[in-house]
Amino acid sequence: MERGRAIVRVSVIGVIVNIVLVVFKAMVGFVSGSVAVIMDALNNLTDVLSSVITIVGTKIAGKAPDKKHPYGHGQVEYVTSITVAVVILVAGVTALVESGKKIVEPEAAVYDAAALIIIAVSVAGKLLLGRYVKAQGRKLNSEALIGSGTDAMLDSLISLSTFVAAVVSMIWHVNPEGWLGAVIAIVMLRSGVELLMTSLGEIIGVRVDSELSGRLKAFICRYPGVLGAYDLTLHRYGPEKIIGSVHVELPDDMTAKDIHALTRHISEDVFASFGILLTIGIYASNTSDGEFATMKEELRGLIVRYPEILQMHGFYVDTERGLVTFDLIIDFKSDRKERIRDELIAEMEKRHPEYAFAVVLDSDISD
Image 1 (cartoon, rainbow, N blue to C red):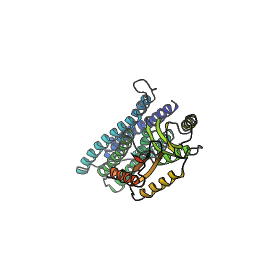
Image 2 (cartoon, rainbow, N blue to C red; image 1 turned 45 degrees about the vertical axis):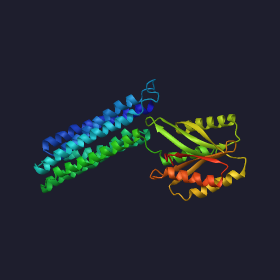
Image 3 (tube, rainbow, N blue to C red; image 1 turned 90 degrees about the vertical axis):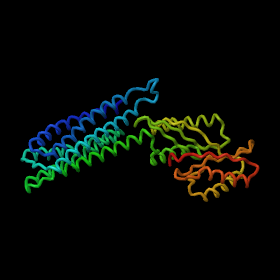
Image 4 (cartoon, rainbow, N blue to C red; image 1 turned 180 degrees about the horizontal axis):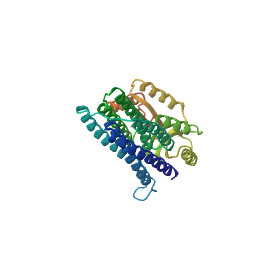
């Protein structure tokens, strides 16, 4: 809840600053006849709209889970970011069209000292605002704020370019307005596309961050008895809610009571340290016979022949059923996953005809 209030507070500050800049830049643009300044003001107006959308989206995303939405409403933040991106793209297209008209039919712009002062102040204002909003976005893990902050910092460069163009126009009577407006539009379009792709990626589902995956697996493996952590899957239901699962490899002589205590302890500690709701499954590891270790090494020797195989885990020999099971992670790019599996099974059954082999092809979803 505190996070939501903080995001709203930052967004309100952005709204106030950008409204002031829109008013003054629009005045300068219309008085001087500068399309670049007018486009710059339009860009700031989209920032106002973006901040308002962020505020509304944050309010909705902060609603408590209900029967219809048991995972909460956090995904609304990504929808908010997509809406912001669309607003930026529409403004960028509009700016590009208007700038194109000015390139074809250029009109002289007339600036005075007051106009230059206003533009210079806007440069400093947008730079400070952008750094503040982006820093708060990272602190609060808000993609919408990070996008708004990045956009504001780009705006400061755009305003600086406008200032330079005004000085050039005053001194050398050269009119670069249309071309500068086109550059501004392209920057806006690029910013919108990047924000759109990031937000769509989060909704579709992106790969688990390598740094987080590594830290989480190392954290789990530090517990006595845990021989490995595999199949880590994390799903985001908004920036602040992550639910996932993982398999841990444990000695096969552990009792259900011991496994219950251990996995419960791990899941509680993971939530306390990472804020992740983690369901823990298990793989058994043979502890009773060295023959199985030799068989496992034989399998590893075969696996090195296939560079597409990224990992083998979950190896276990069930003597009562005469069954050997293990999982393979094969690169997404490989088009012969089933063939590799079948070849490994055939070779291992040839070497150990007393056993059947069952292999699961896992997806390469985390490092």
